[in-house]
Image (cartoon, rainbow, N blue to C red; front, side):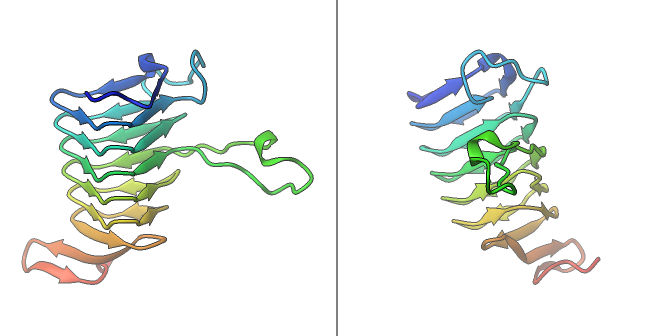
Length: 167
């Protein structure tokens, strides 16, 4: 493991075997050292993963990264956002809604991508560089953009097909 930028609350973070965490990665459960978290494991990174340098993974509720997931550099993954509905109250004093995040086995998250609360990335998915994932991306898909949209998917009977899978 390279020198890290920040690691908070290691007891709530699980990192699998043969996983490489790149240089200058921020990895935290909660916002401050010593914070008590709701779950025993808040951030779970599987086996044989590669987290690209200068990335940030900030969990509060649940971030599950499967096995053999690779990320490019400067990827940000979080399960919490800031509420801003009440314009009379500073954002820092409003609620911070949490929604679990999952990234399936064998997926690849491109350079500069942002994975936001509630994102569910399936197995064997490619997220293009600088994409923002806000929802569900099905297994065996390629998704790009902001917000990320499926542009290609795999069908076992015919192979790779352009466009979103039909439901």
